Each structure stands twice: as C-alpha cells, then as structure tokens.
Image (tube, rainbow, N blue to C red; front, side, top):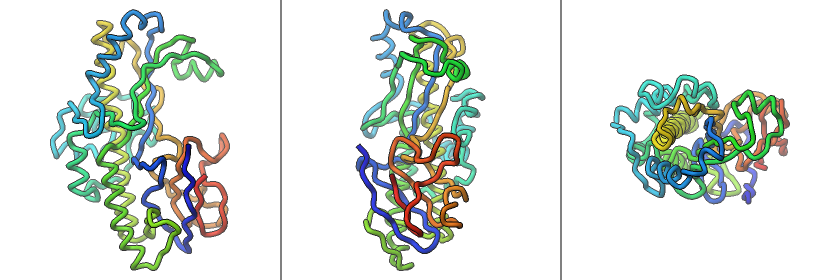
Length: 312
C-alpha cells in the first residue's frame, strides 16, 4: 500500500529531500530486466542449481558486502560517471546504457556533495542486492499482450526465461538523504519555510543547500546504475557457469532499467512538470508504482492547488 503524503506549501521554488514510501527511501531504486534465449524447459532441470548460483554470486541482506573490487578512487569515479564507469571497467556491455533511463548517468552529479559517511557506507556494497523489498528473480514470460513490442524487446515467446533485479543506491543513497534532512531542516529555519510534516524537509532550489542536494542525489543515482550493472555482470556469470556457455551466447541483454516510476526517481527540473502554474514552483518526488501522467504525455505531477505540491 502507498502512504499518503501531505502537501508542502511554498511561494517559491523548493526541492524536497525525500518522500515516505512504506517508511523507506532509496535514491534511484529501480528494476532492470535481462532477457535470455532460454526456455522454461531448459531451466527446469537445473533450476535449484541456477537459483543457488545466483544467490552465491550476488550478496544479499542488510549490510551485505560486495565482491566487486572497489577502491576509494573507483567510488569517486563511479559516482560521477555512472554506467560509463561500469563500461570502462568491463562490468557492462556498450548496449546496456541504451536501455537505461538517462543512459545510466546523470551529468549534474558531483561526488564532492556526497558525505564521507555516505561514501564509507557505499564503498563495500557495490554489486549487492540489499534487503526489504529488493529482489533478484528468475522469471518466465507467461503472457504476451503486444507481440510487436515484445519482439522489439527480444521477448519472443511464452515460456522465455528472463531475470529481474530490483535494488537501488544502498546505504550510500540512504545516507545522502539522511544528510540532506539535517541540512535542509536548518535551511528551513533560516528561510522561514514551514511544512505540514517535519520529515518533508526542503530547501530552495537556488539555495546552496538545494543545489548541493541535487548534485549529491544525482551522484547517488549514478551509484544505483553502477550497482545494478555490477549485479547484471554477476548474474551473467552465474548463468554462464550453470549452462557452460557465455552470457553473449545466452543473449543476456538488458531489456530496460528504470527507476520505479516516481517512487525514488531523481527529479528533473523541467517546465512541463509545472505548466499548470506558469512557472516552476517545486520539485515533486512522488511515492508510488505508476506515473500520474497519461501515456504519451510528459510526466508531471497531478494538478494540486496553486503553490503547493501533492503526491498521489
């Protein structure tokens, strides 16, 4: 279930540090779908072995440690480069980024706006799934509604095996949001900003706090893409091991990588979001699994009263 979030009233541009979604927040928490050319019949005889291989390759659980070698300098570059770092280091295929939102990299990211504590938490967690509602699932296509669209994605028949990964920016992103709450709380007092809920900490977009948060949030988003890319590398290795083949021969291409729509997606400060007020007024992070906009239209928040921001 989704938790309703109260309005945050403002008279000028504000950026909200995070929203409550099931009591959690995770920057660029998203899902990635990886196809294969295997059928359910191919996997059935080895499904237990395959599940164990995936479990062995991808660390899971709260505080889990990754097996991708990462030094402090690597982390700085990953925060800035996103999936381009994964490509350079050999953990992603060139075509992977073509199927990621933002092409797997937010250019406004600034690792200097990520605290040392956040980096300390993120350094050992690259390539880890986490806990809670995060998962790595071996799935089977059981119904095709649009054959043309499915073929374009390489999903060609019922019974085809795919893999879905659901994870985000782990402890690093959590800490970025936690740090922002403290900073923005002070900024609200200075700028005499009030909200209905103290957890809706915010700062003016053009303030130092607002700019720092957006840059740090973009860096955390880049970390999430690197994290899912690392897990994709590990899943490909697990499948290759079990089937005595190569990831390329198994056609293990990324179908899509998207942030859960408006759940933890980094904000895009663009005019279409605010067309109903005539000028940008706030950056809306909405909790939920679907966009409020219609198919084919620019994604935008539902129309609330003037100078306030609601979250469906």
